[in-house]
Amino acid sequence: MLRILESKDMGRLLARRDARLHEAEAIVQPILDAVRKTGDKGLIEYAKKFDNFDRKTVRVPLAELKAAADRLTPEFRSAVKVASDRVRAYAKKQLPREYRSGQLGQIVRPLDTIGAYIPAGRYPLPSTVIMTVVPAQVAGVKNICIACPKAVDEVFGTAHLLGIDQVFQMGGAQAIAAFAYGTKTVPKADRIVGPGNIYVAAAKKLIAGETGIDFIAGPTEILIIANEGDPRFLAADMLAQAEHDTDACSILLTQSKRLAAQVVKEVERQLQTLPTAPVARKAIDKNSAIVIVKNLDEAAELSNAFAPEHLSIHHEELIPKIRHAGSIFIGPYSPEAAGDYAAGPNHVLPTSGVARLRGGLSVTDYVKVISIQKLDAKSLRKIAPAVTTLARAEGLEAHARSVEVRLA
View 1 (cartoon, rainbow, N blue to C red):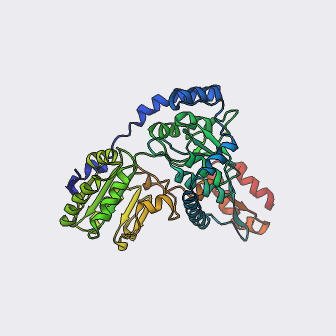
View 2: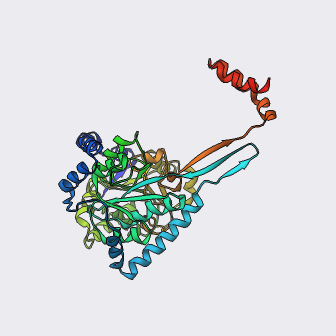
View 3: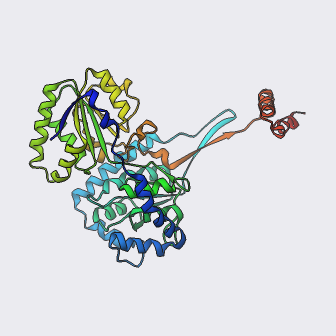
């Protein structure tokens, strides 16, 4: 049953579960090494071992992608269009602008190749195809690749609907290795994005110095701050997060003991008819809680300490006090599930406190901002004393002379 704690007892929740990444790293390192050394051979061997792979190549034929799309229902195809249109519109607003201001400026250039990892374990995630592919398209990435370990119509078909033909049936650490190092079949990616299990996370951590990644994701989480509201809504939001994984975490911060008791009862009631209750129940019992706080200021500080992946608030006046969150959902009619699918912002978000460092996946993860400098003699002369003084202070005489020779 969902626990009710005092704020002083929240320490165990703030100290997240150990994801045991170091153990996973020891397991995936040989996989990375094998794919690096043997390419497709190692990739296919591990795909057969872990994913029951039975193809000759991991590359999925275009005809198969089209057939998958043809099998999708009209309702599903419509949902993909609505969601992708909204994600595209939001990504366009995020795109950094190019500018020239006098002698200075910047240009924006897309990455050449990206690899998007699409999980297909307990739940296949076609929505992640939308969230990883559409911002890359907005950024102008020419070579967009998708990895998914299972042949799932909703994943393959969504890729086809979005115009993606480089789809690879591969998963786990071997997929990350293929994108990181490249094989005869799989292009080397400049950046690898998308969520995955602990082995995918460990693999991304180990290859991060050799190719770009978005971030290393842990178990999913939501933190809700509410002093009033419909207990049904709050319970539903907690369960929506809990059903992802037995390690998922749902936390409600409230001043109201009455509301806390109502939400506990409502969670139990909704679990009775929830098809995913076996998973959600474990996440609720092991990792989740309602925490009674003194006031909204304390709630904001506890939230900032946790730096949640998803932050749901029913009090908009808290926004100025929020420093760390992956994505914020305001008010009773902004459920986290809306953001997972069709609100517009990305659902690939930082977990395990990484929201202290960055927000969610965005179009900016797929571009480079390159500075431009074009000085004339007058401009160079104006800054020359600062340049030469700093250069000589660092012992870099040639730097100073490279300026002075132009002004002699």
